[in-house]
Image (cartoon, rainbow, N blue to C red; front, side, top):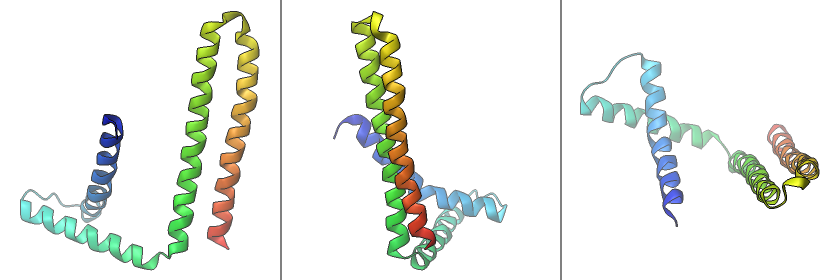
Length: 127
């Protein structure tokens, strides 16, 4: 793994661990200053998350992951497309207009696929 991937994974793990604790602290409306009370808040948040996961079925988890992967796939596709168009227009500036037209057509197709998969995930969730 490169450095950027490691940092991104670390940020995700930290946000999954501490975000529920922040939500619990905000709901309680109190400020915890000691380490014991902060540990207690993290334990309460952990219990809250575990009870929510017990209520959520594996199907909902799969649907959530599918929707996230669809959004990530669309973003990566548009990013690769934009990079290719910038590279091509830097090599041949006179083709910029045609390249932008083609880019918008392909970007619409990529976004259409991503939106279609998100709609399918939503349909599966509510059925």
